[in-house]
Image (cartoon, rainbow, N blue to C red; front, side, top):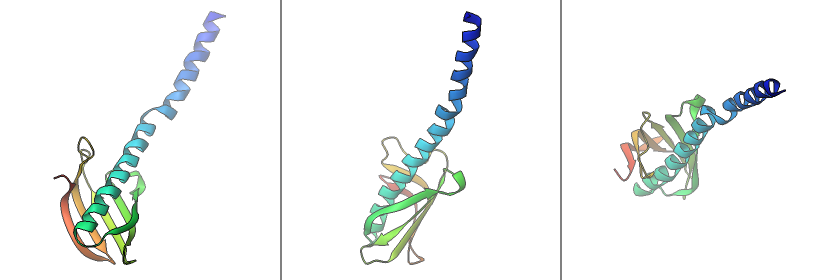
Length: 120
């Protein structure tokens, strides 16, 4: 009886690994990166005279966690977009900055190009 129970318990534990393993950590990292990009991107648009209405809506393209695209509107109802291309270590400790190539556009016209957002 004991021998039969162990394989069932081990099988159940192994079956849970994909659900709670790396995929979940990657999803959390992606969500944090999108949120940070939205927050710091909105501040960058405000710095150049295009305050964002609400929040930027950000997404990682094709599961590429280090390319984030964001869209939104400024307070004058003009479309704004931001693209962040970064390396693996883009976010700083404390979520105060992002490093990489960051391009912000208003109605497809580039209004800023930076290598860092936030406290740089």
